[in-house]
Structure formats: structure tokens, C-alpha cells
Image (cartoon, rainbow, N blue to C red; front, top):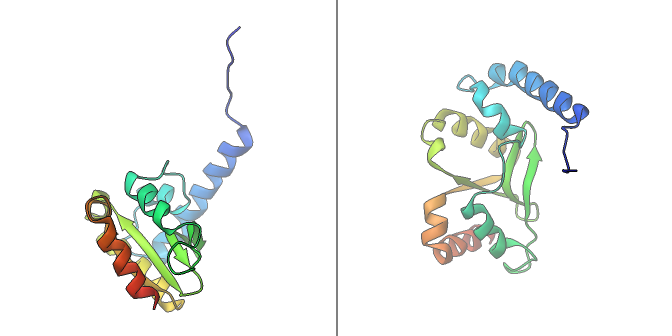
Length: 143
């Protein structure tokens, strides 16, 4: 017999209700919000990008002057790519889809700054092609 997997109905119900909830309140808070962004906000967009994996290898295990980083951390209605609580620093990696979501990203950054976080952004290509320079920029923002 073949092994057959079945979706957990509670998981899909939770996902559907989370998406419905997010779709109901986020457009009111963020005028440039589109419902296509819901999966990104609640973390259902899939596996990390190559750039996220590469940067995480450099940030994890307190490798940057002993600072502790976390990845995919919920902050208010958002999930940030990387967070260092000790330095109140959020690191966001942007891919091609962020060109069309510029207004959403501005609102997101404003919200995070209002909460006391500094936000720095890098393009995925920057991380992949100039990793050392990106890490140096992160170090400058930690001090």
C-alpha cells in the first residue's frame, strides 16, 4: 500500500479564518494593502528564499559580535524576516515582488519605527552577490 497524506482540517480551517481576519482589518490600517499580501503577513508564503537562508547562516548563533537574532518573528500584524531585540533592529529582505508593494512596505516600516525599531532593507540580490558588505552594514547598524 502507498502512504497517503491527508490535510489536517483544523489547520486549513485555522488558515482560512486567519486569512479572513487579516483581510478584514489590514486594509483599514494600511490603505495600500492588498489581500494577496495576507499569506506573506501570516507566514504562509512558503520556504525561505536563498537570500534568507544565506543571511541566516551569518546571523544565527550570535556570530555578529554576540547579538542574538531571530527569524520570522511576529511584530504586531507583521512577520519580520530577522529581528535583534537587543539592538531594536529589524532586517527585511526584499525580492522582486516588493517593487509593486512599495506602499505596503512604507506603511509596514512606519509601523515598526513607531514601535521603536530601526528597519534596514536589502534586496535579495544584494545578499546573494555582496554578502560580506551586507553583513558589514548590519554590524554598523548594531552599534
